[in-house]
Amino acid sequence: MSSTDSYTPPDVWTQPEGDGNKWASINRPVSGATHEKARSVGKHPLQLYSLATPNGQKVTIMLEELLAAGISQAEYDAWLVNIGEGDQFSSGFVDVNPNSKIPALVDTTTTPETKLFESGSILVYLAEKFDMFIPKDPQSKVACFNWLFWQMGSAPFLGGGFGHFYSYAPYPMEYPINRFAMESKRQLDVLDKHLAQHTYMAGDEYSIADMAIWPWYGNLVLGNLYDAKTFLQVHEYTNLSRWAKQIEQRNAVQRGRIVNRTWGDDGQVPNRHSAKDIDDALKG
View 1: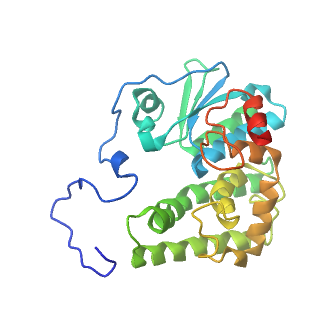
View 2: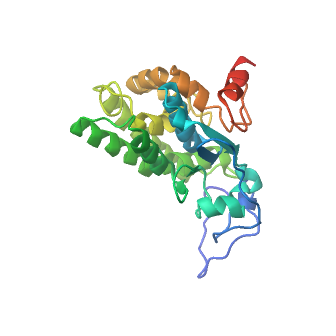
View 3: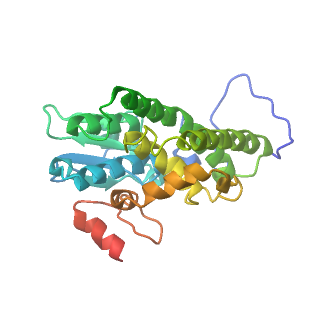
């Protein structure tokens, strides 16, 4: 169907057998496990189940930042969840996250174990547990949470909206690409204007808001997401680009972004069980 063909929705929707989408085999209208498989458990206090998509990078960056700050209790095992193969529908994963989306985290130091899902929730949990990366100043703290939840609400328009129709849809469709490109550029403009007045998202202090926003919008303006740097003319957003490059230079960001990654020439760490796993990948 071309972008100009008309489409009349049926009276009752039914799942199509296939639509050419590369993810069609794992899309389904019901929740729950499709197969029995226990989740892997390592030796560290925190057990992460994830993939190095932007949502996954948020948590691995946070964990690496905590370790860089000297918090040894933040040691973690990171297990690859291959969403293309349906790993997120295993019984072990669904037990942690009934929504079957990465990332998911288990804190084994509590009784009972604490099971966490949704990247924003995980960031807040870790920040509060270790008393790090949420500003103490009341106004800055509010700004941190404002921007954290802005990201949680806005990124689906960038990812499932623009990213899907620009990069993953089975054929180009003018209307949705225009609609979501316009919204993505509006969001970039929101960030650019804010960062014209602030060093970081919450002011002068690096926080979980930066860790949440950078994997999506930082990667986008740096040319690491959807190959859309030219299409969206991201060079227009000079303040956002300054911030993105500044965050990119952080050692913990460079380490965290390659955990649970199976692609790319600048480091792959499918499963992380020690700092050495990342050290070796960055050397190689």
